[in-house]
Image (tube, rainbow, N blue to C red; front, side, top):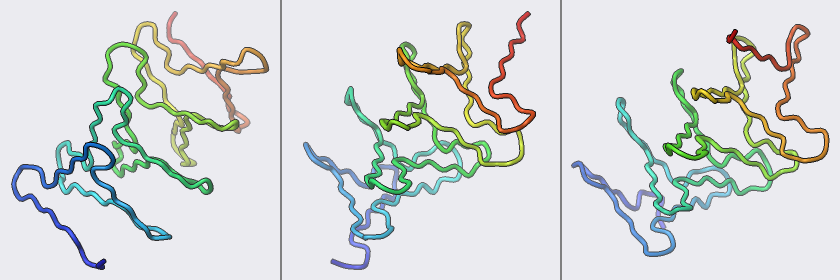
Amino acid sequence: TTADQVVLVEQLGSGTGLTSRAPSGNAILAENTATTGGTAIVARTLSTSGVSWTIHAVNNSSGGRGVVGWANSPTGVTVGVNGVAVSPGGYGMLGNNTATTGAGYGVYGQSLSSAGRGMVGIVPSATGATIGVVGQAASTSAQGVLGLATATTGSTFGVVGRSNSAAGVGVKGTSPAT
């Protein structure tokens, strides 16, 4: 036990700095045992230009997950995966499905709660032409946004819109076609 750095691996060439393999279990286990705060793994990429990855996860399993974030506390406002971008043209989270057939999802949200939301878009700015969620599709038989209420009974709605402005409109649809 020490308060100082225990292991330093530095690759000054172009190869891999550290490789870890395990036939089962965990190849690397990092655990922060602090009761408040702290981080188990800190990774940094010091590149200032070009495309680079701080963590590049590859999983070849047919049911695999490249990265899993699990916020295990049953209370509080927890986040499984948090993405942050400071560039005005950046994305806090990017989902990209590269399949060319089938119903692939770039981003998929699911909630098991009886009052849950599968996906929520919030823009807290009180000024500007902000948009909470954007749907765009380029196909000749496309739907930019689709709302499905799949229950076969009850008072359900595929899409619901609400405006708190006295001059606002809950749902607006336009078509430039003649």
